[in-house]
Amino acid sequence: MLALTFSTGIVDAIGYLALDRVFTGNMTGNVVILGMAMTGSTDLPVLGPLVALVMFVFGAMAAGRRLRASPDGWTSATTVIFAGVAVCLALEGLLFLVFGAADFPYKTEAAAAVLGFAMGAQAAAARKVKVADVTTVVVTSTLTALAAESRFGANAGQPWIRRILAVALILLGALVGAALLMVGTWLPFALSAAITTAALVWGHRRMRKERL
Image (cartoon, rainbow, N blue to C red; front, side):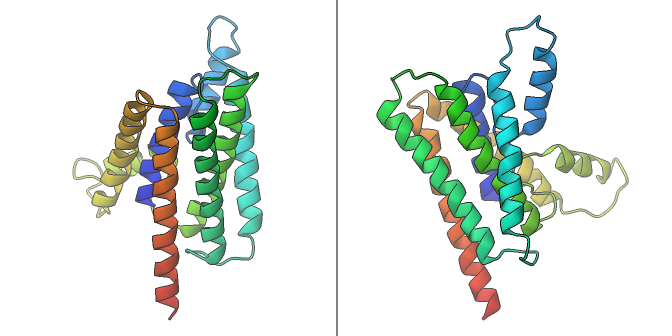
């Protein structure tokens, strides 16, 4: 789940920097952008964030339906969903590698739609896996818990290493994604797809080992 959090940082860097200020993992960002854009006094995009938001919902809905009969934790259905996410990322990377310089109508919105759907599915699957404080797509609640339960807050015992890693990895993912975009748009897609694939293989093998 931490590896997928890192991957989400990469994906959101792609969305914001390469797809005209669209968040494909962090839907709070899109809702805020849409709210500000509705004033009509800014140059903020509307279509891209709206498409990403709607497709995120559909992705989460589709994953939730697929996981309806599955128990909590990592299951075969979880593996299938994460595999679908990896395929979406790989195909996006391939398309940008082949047609990156070409300009098509609604190119960025289409890319945001695919990424939004994939991230919605990933978030729903991560919710089912239930690793506390690691949703893979947002860290606001993780930061809140980290601060509130710290020695300077409630002074309660907490899994602070996992929480710090979740925040640090999404930050590092965004840094890596932004750096790779300076080389080629397809590169962060490829890396994110590779990380997602490695995570799902590792998770699936661990699940099978625990069931033996």
